[in-house]
Length: 301
Image (cartoon, rainbow, N blue to C red; front, side, top):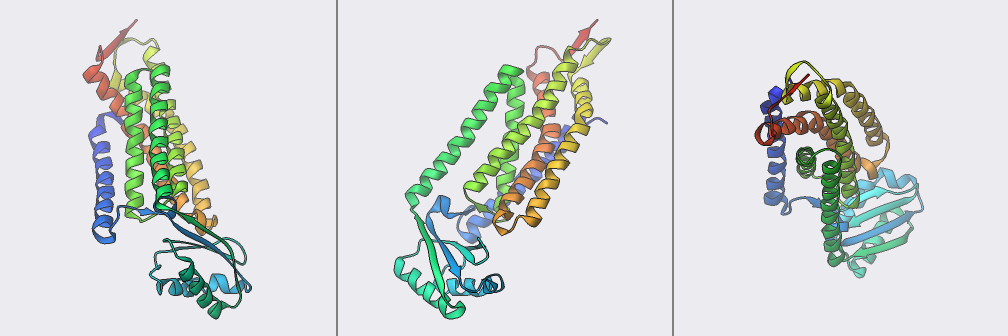
C-alpha cells in the first residue's frame, strides 16, 4: 500500500476540510455577524446560577426559561443544568435591574427562585483571555518545534508543526461551521489535540529514523523507507486512536450538556491528529527530503 505516493490525494482531502472551515467563517460573519460563537470568557458577559424549589420543573421547562430570556433579547444565552435544582445561565452583559425583572418573571412561572451567584466578565478581561489563549498556542508550538529539532532534525520539526497547525485550523474551522461555543474549555481542548497529535507523529518519525539507520542492501529511497515505517506503525496508531475516540464518544453521550461542545471539539481534533500524523506529516517529510535534503536515496552495505 503506497500511502506516501498518494500524497496529492491526502492533501486534496485536507484542502476540502479547510474550505469547509473557511465557508463556516464566511457564513458566520455574513449571517451571524461574528466569526465564531465566542463565549462570555472571551466577549464578556453575565453568568447567573439560579436554584429552583421544584427540581422537576427545571429539565422539563428549559424552553420556557429561554422564552423569558428572549423577551429581553437574550435568546442566544447558554442554559445548562448544574445540579438537581440549579440552573446556569450564561448570557450577554445584563444590568441589575433587568436581571431582577427576569428573576421575577421566572418566579411567576416556576415559584420561588434563589439567586446563588451572579458573575460579570468585562470586555477587557475577555480581550486578555483571547490574548493569553493565542500566546498559549504559540508557545506550545514553539516548544514542540525546539523539542523535535533537538530529538530528530529541523525538517522533521517543520513537517510536524505544519501537521499540527493543519489539525488546529481545521478543528477551529469546523467548530465555527457547527457554531460550537468557544471558551476556555475550547482552548484546553485545542491544546490537548496538539499534545495527542504530536505524540502520534513522534512515534512514526521515530520508526522512520530507525529504518533510515538500519542496514539494508542496495539503494533505498526516503519515500520507500517512510512508507514502510508508516505501515509498521499503522496498527498502533489505529488502536490508540480508536481507544481515545471510544472514550470521547462515551463522554459526548453521557457527559451531559456542559461537556457536549468540549467533546465534539476533541472528537474532531483527535480524528484529525490520527489522520495528519500518517497522511500529512509523513509525506511532507519526504517532500522536504526530496527538495532540500542532501541526498534523495541512501546506499548502505
